[in-house]
Image (cartoon, rainbow, N blue to C red):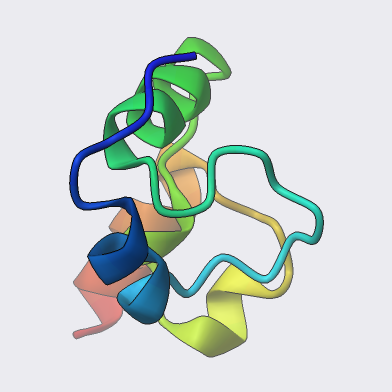
Length: 67
């Protein structure tokens, strides 16, 4: 896995609650991984939803329809 040049900066604002995520802060790797699983990364969700680990497109749309 290629390391991101902004790894430290990205880790500071990453809201992923999964420990020990090997992609934390490596946004390119994270996005690639989650899209391959037909889901979105943690940063697409508020913390309360992210912690449920339901990162599906369906949940994302539900959140945005609710406003």
